[in-house]
Image (cartoon, rainbow, N blue to C red):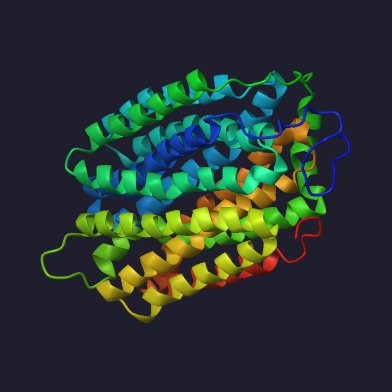
Length: 415
């Protein structure tokens, strides 16, 4: 592995990003990530939950936990593998385009099945396809954006979450009675974003890498975690994502079974209100967090503070099951999680062990995103089943967010 400059994630042997991002790159990153998160939120958070409930209403919590957990295993495997393949070819755009186009048939298949086993298999395929797309588009920032602009670039990536969440929630609610059509709409949006991104961005082809034996490839994946700062960034992201997805994956069921909604309000309508509310606050905190972290060159401070704010947000619905409490939760959660994802993404690009392995190592880091999604549904399902409700789930998720805030302290090469 080549030597890495401290805190930059750039290697002496690898090409360095240009002095400023290419014109139009940041808006295209926003579009590409918005489409991706729109599918994740709209499908996994609304349509898939409704489809599972329609098949077996009595066992919806355990069935949904099983599907989400098993499919996340596929996401965990495919993300670093796809990243390593794009590293080997020295290209990102073909993988973005291929993953995006394949989202259409994957969503078509998901809408066509009607048993828990087949839904699980179909969503596994969908996760695999989307993680090919995600691994490549995630690597664009360390590939093509200079360190001094990483906060702004990461904010553009981070804005994809609130915009995508709003898009996903609104389209999910709109197609709640016709989820098969909804699946196709989300697949088409991702495909269109992939075509737009690859048609409008030029990439400098990086040197292709010679294939390694399987044992060496496995060792290379694990090797990134031997880097001190990268390992702590991985741990912090994993803890916060575990807390976040333990709750967010069950949002529809929380609104059905925990929250006291106003008379006449359906849970699907409540999702369509909460997601845009969260998104507005996410937009504000993402932009401010990315800008201020660049301005003051302080990544750890913003990451730790935003993780603690997320913990505070998760404590609110544990104290009160009222609708106003859920509204406040959505606002505070948006402020905390938006800033966290924007600044933590910038931090991560600065602790990559080597630039020539950026996609592979970002794929390894994405295990911290996908891995917790494997265990989160099982943990959440067990907590809800044992405690008989969702209050204990909020408390556990808040404690995980506090642990995520503390995990950034040992990082040495980034302030």
